[in-house]
Image: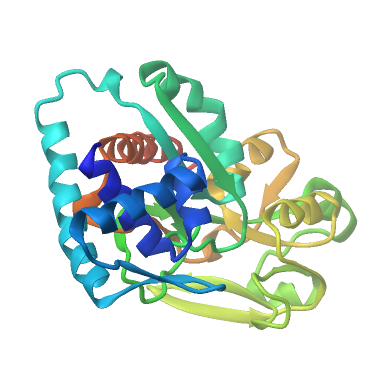
Length: 301
């Protein structure tokens, strides 16, 4: 009986408040995770979890064990990596979440190189505009673009993404392009929101480090990055998006940058993960690779 494995199961169940979510996160059958908890409770002679029909939560004894266990497991992870000479032996599942545009334009075209170096790592990549719950959904790390809300998660700054104002060549042929901010009233903006009904329809730009806005007419509002770009390509108006996702289309002449001296402020890019000391080596290596990849692609034109 591996006591560390019992503790790992207990920690995940406690963090996720669910046997099912913990078993999925650990890659183990639910019955195995449940058996681990029963063995641990028998071994310690204490009830560790309070089970209800809706959730699982730690008892007072369980909370004490959780606080001690997560530190101990973190130290074991550090010890395992301390004497590792060849990082090619890194193995295990790694679950990450990132914006759709980053996955499509940057990560997927280059992922084979990472997996060739680390063939025993199995990656689960979620790409959605929805803000996933890192802890409850069992993610090792998530990539976020934009300002971060107050959070207990650890944030690793990866730099900033330059932005661009773009229209399609078809839109420019039909409506022309704005030359000055005053011209924006004769144009249309495609509005992007995470939730409908939030945010005013406005063209944003940075002036000496301060965000400025110009109200604009809008015919289409979307809540998905793919739809946002598609609306622009469909000649529906101006979009304001990270330059790295537009670079190929701009070079091909499919899109045209407008008002280049009135770009929005760069968007902060961050990697979030739960506990600095609990970071598995495979996750650390992946985050280092992802940071280098973004830096290589994030060059201004």
